[in-house]
Length: 325
Image 1 (cartoon, one colour):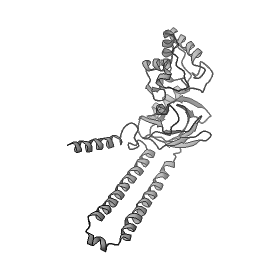
Image 2: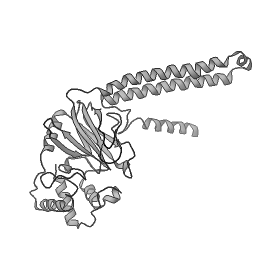
Image 3: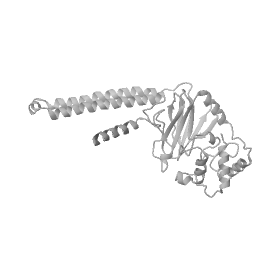
Image 4: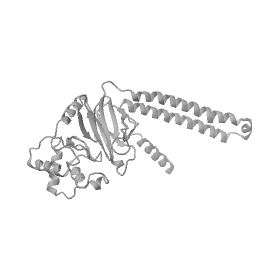
């Protein structure tokens, strides 16, 4: 019974590793599907090699001494140690090279987005045809069913962009721009992660790609072009004033201060699902905690904790940020 439970537990762990919010084996786009097919082909190819090699090993153990004397060992070595690996690996290599060609195919109507890696957050720029740049952070909205060309670079150390359900990994290297094509076939939220160790908060450098229907994406993009709305409530006005005094040195809210790039653009913060590069859901409680206790929730980040703010000022800043849709 104990052995059976162990086998079942191992099987459950194996199956759990093949699904979830960050699984390359649950593709949601054509490029991720190509990668998944390559993986499965290599998996079954490896299984075939393992089965054949194990069979040869068992044959060597169980055959009789008389048959061992009659068998030429060089034939077994050539067949199992040379011919089998060469044929299998050559076939897998040829298939992989052929399948990888599809990962470089870019549709003519692809949109272009620039993603800049910082320790430990993502700066996202939507590039318009007339030189327009719409800046957001840590979340990438895309139209479902349409290819997206990502231009990837880093401001500090090497990062790696990886949204397993949509594409493979691509490094962000200082002084170099790499490009990656992603596409989501259906609306949904697809989590990604920095896949290259980049310092203390590497594990909390996540991101989300949110695929929407094309009409919904166009509405969202139009809203992102607009500056922040002017608050009409007196408490929010106090919050905006406190934000400009305490936060505008690093963060930009278009329409209230000069553009800053040390921290994420917060012009439309309330429209985002998460804060802290995927660390926490975007809600009032988490905003209060993240502002007051930044170094507890994300130690080592460039943003200092604002625990010295009086509760009224902190509440007013959060109320102002919640109005930034």
